[in-house]
Image (tube, rainbow, N blue to C red; front, side, top):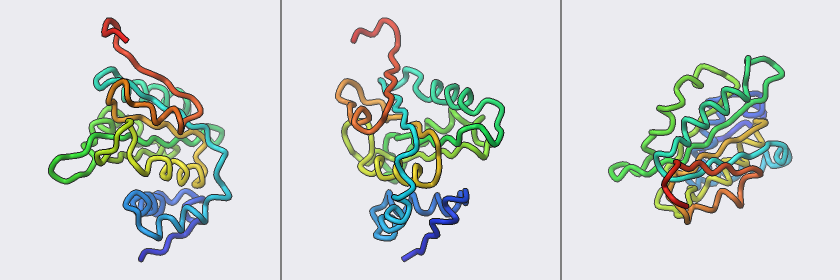
Length: 176
């Protein structure tokens, strides 16, 4: 069982945060323990859900929104986390990582943290542990958390229960 340091996570240790997110995503007991340690620091982040059908430009929109949010990266710029829920690989069960490929220009900004997670068969556009990962990122001190759904269609409504603001991305001429 790994031991996580909530102080290191709050101070921006990306490796400690990544390991804690993995433990939480995989339902490991130490993941829930670190979430409990960071819980008093939650409730401060603004959660933005980006949803819509596959191929409508969700990742491209997230990329540009986050670039605008960060502006000229400085101490006053908000820290932004992105959770990109991807389809699951039929071979490994992991995330296919297509969303992160379209956001590569954000990778060099230390004020941005990106995490892909596989839907693992969950319906509704989010993975089963998306809400828990969001809470951990909030407790880690991120000001804005962008949640990009897997892009499943009209039944993809779980993000509306999780996010404060929801953006639906639609391609023109495709109906409702």
